[in-house]
Image (tube, rainbow, N blue to C red; front, side, top):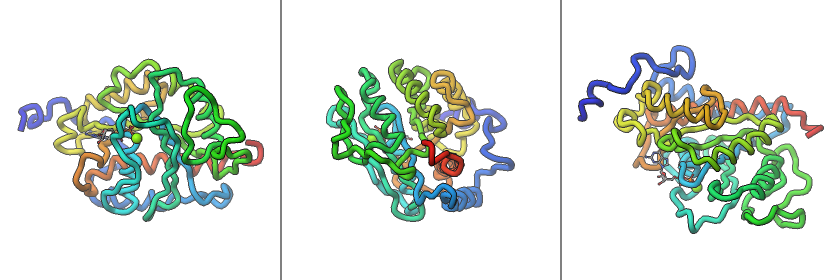
Length: 290
Ligand SMILES: Nc1nc2c(ncn2[C@@H]2O[C@H](COP(=O)(O)OP(=O)(O)O)[C@@H](O)[C@H]2O)c(=O)[nH]1
Ligand SMILES: [Mg+2]
């Protein structure tokens, strides 16, 4: 074992984040979090059967891996609902919804894959606004040159509240967090203006923290004590203007053969926060006016 790892160099004495009071990294916590997540159901007032979350982020930052990790938690073993590591060249930008089998049937996750943040994304931003409003159906392929037309088979002219997005998750590769691509920062900030105007809650998730920190690679329990991760969160917060407590570090299950309660804790913390916010948003949203 490397000396730095053995001596705990780069770790804070006390965790810099306490997900909740008296948080302990044990099986009971994982079970409690899991039960909490399963119990988050739409309220009767919202009229919803399922919450819809949207994942946004640059190619390769771990969106598909995170969606797969949620699905794995839902079925209790490692599974795949969308392919991770598609190559950038072969991927067209498209929007897809994933409905989970297993215990998390009340959640739908939307993924916009291949979003070319490096290029001019203005026409895409207009389409993204329509996704947030529920005007675009799953399976739509973006045309970078022009917006969707109301004649398109993937256009929903009269979206219901259940078609809309109830919460958004911005996915950022933690190893890139200190120097995010300028057009990605610009794109996210522009999308966030739309998201804020619609009052949709947003969180950010930092993936690949095992690549950023050898402590986390060795044991995921170091995640809330690692200074590098704390710094990556602070940098992301500054650049994307998302508050620090709304940025969550994880290691997705993508590169693991299997996962246990230990590895599932950070993912469950994300799910709990995201879905609770979706519940509050859908309960309070003015469905008649919007
Ligand atoms: N080490 C590590 N690799 C990851 C993690 N999350 C994703 N990856 C890898 O990063 C690559 C891109 O992930 P993907 O989910 O396809 O990104 P997307 O393009 O945003 O959907 C894949 O090779 C994944 O296996 C993580 O938490 N740790
Ligand atoms: Mg993907």
